[in-house]
Image (cartoon, rainbow, N blue to C red):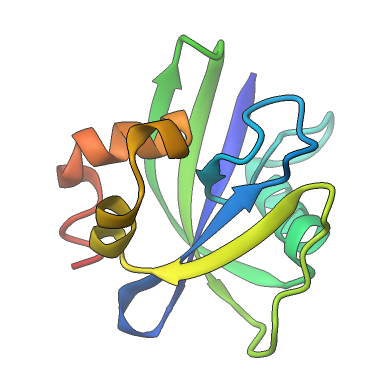
Amino acid sequence: MTNHAAIILRDENKVLFVQRSANKKSLPNIWAFPSGTIEEGESPEETTIREAKEELGIDIEIEKSLATVELPELGARLHFVTCTSKHNGNIVCDPNEIQATKWLTFKEFFNEFTDEEIGHGLIHLRKHPEIWHSSFN
């Protein structure tokens, strides 16, 4: 399974982190990036844009691919892509998908949350700051 995670940026290197709904079958209540699985006939970019629209009600523009991480514990591959939001207002989340959002720097996020509170992809990024540090510091 291949998923795409949107690292949505705004001023001052703030990144949008989302807390998955308590109703999710997989990783409920976990903090992560907005993400989704590629559907048949869909490009990775289309997946990222669709998921941001469905989960957050916002339009995004993809900037670049940041990294790809193999997550054998989930049987998944996760592609991180950096994006910018075309939306300046409030984010209106689908409550079946996301229960909370926070704009934080990576450093602020990793200081606030433990590995037990975050998704596997973010645990990988915590262990490998060389992936994000130069782009988000």
